[in-house]
Amino acid sequence: LLLRESIICRDARFCVSTQEKLLVIGVGGTFTTLASLKTRKIHHYKMPVKELERLFDKLCAMTIREKIEKACIEKGRADIIVPGAAIAIELLRLSGTKTVTVSARGVRYGLLSPGSGVLSLESRLLTPDP
Image (cartoon, rainbow, N blue to C red; front, side, top):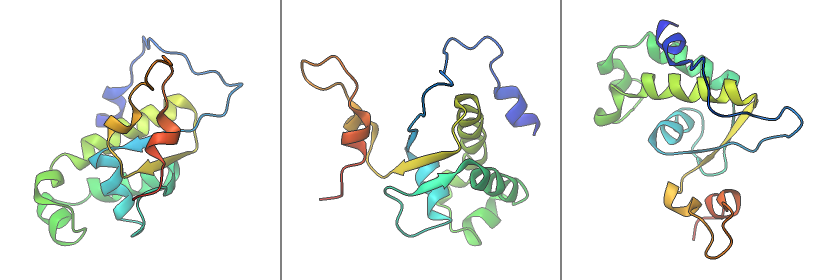
């Protein structure tokens, strides 16, 4: 809990409209690792924030060795999964969203569309695997 509390930015430089329903797409090793603890089909997996919080609590109670041996988390990720999950949970909490859609694609798929000047995250990050 102390780790998660230290992440909260009291002078946030962004605003989330409560009028809009956000589609939050989680990319990168933290989201894909956490999703892999719940499902084999990671790409497009819709993970409730409450489930992320339960996984966070479970992982906090484990040693690095237990994370590797019992949870099958890669050796190079076992020591950083808890801080990564804490950051993810707090950002999701601040956004007000209840679920995150996990993408197995990397951030490079969410680059600006040529000439449009508009982020094209959803369509490119959530396209089916080839």
